[in-house]
Length: 161
Image (cartoon, rainbow, N blue to C red; front, top):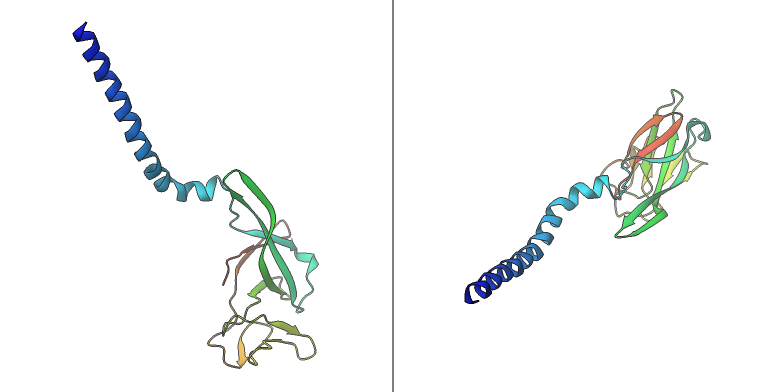
């Protein structure tokens, strides 16, 4: 009887110890695996569709809102507004996609159709239709986003800037 009780206690203590070890190891493994899951399982979009190429007139900037979806734990959020971009289509159908924020202090820039320039109302920044700095305190040209065209759809790799 003594031998059976010792054997039971040995097995029980190993089971409890193994359960505790697994409880400690699981978060560590989850932390290590999470970056891979984030890109594959969570559905984070690398390129976001902002419309058809035909929806953009040549040489006339068009402001577009970037929406995406996000999975957070068990919830899927569709149509989240991530930000905005200015899209300029050239005659050869190449695209320039610019941030709507001034590189100086992040103020919102607008297209001045009467002067054919992007204008920052905060500190007088001025940029041409190609996003190049013309005047003002901005340290550089407008930030551009990587784009590609697939099946006549414009895809933008959007990141907050």
